[in-house]
Image (cartoon, rainbow, N blue to C red; front, side):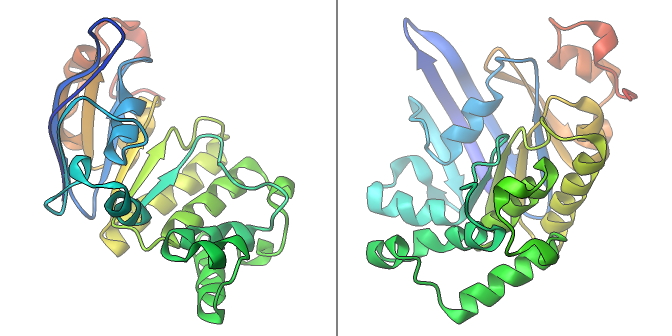
Length: 255
């Protein structure tokens, strides 16, 4: 379980990016973080794996406080936290297989990582993960020759190669067409259930959050204004989350 307690982050002259943020996320569930642009969604994700340093609070993953980890401990913890980015964050000239194998770098020595020394078992696992996301036939194709949706699926396979407890997804479908969006979200939802992963996703698309997630965290101006099961979210809750947004833009039945 992931548990965030009283997380605070300020920028500049006491401007709060996050203020007393509290929530939990469970294995086997997809959790969406939704809210207006600039509300703090990305800051939450980057605080969880300490890509940015927050000011105070606790971030507990299976009772280990990530915020208190020293650099060596943090490196080990991060190896079990997959990250999926809006812009894919792949090495474009390399093949899909090579990019997936990079998910093992955190478990290797500097020398082995530098020279790409992967075992036959690791290569076989990478091929199986590409098959799991529907890309077995593209294993040896350069990533810059793949579509955006295919590249994002390579990113998912790479995250799985880390043997993660949790996968953090920062706007993973923002650049995708509807067909690719459905494929990616179907995969993430299936992985959460089958592998009992904690999956957290920043989303702008309310309809996608309603259709694909189990749990919703609503944030506005750096504060959590709603947390609960997706099934309990209605138009009134959405207006509370997006209280400065166009009321026509955020309804539970958005298409």
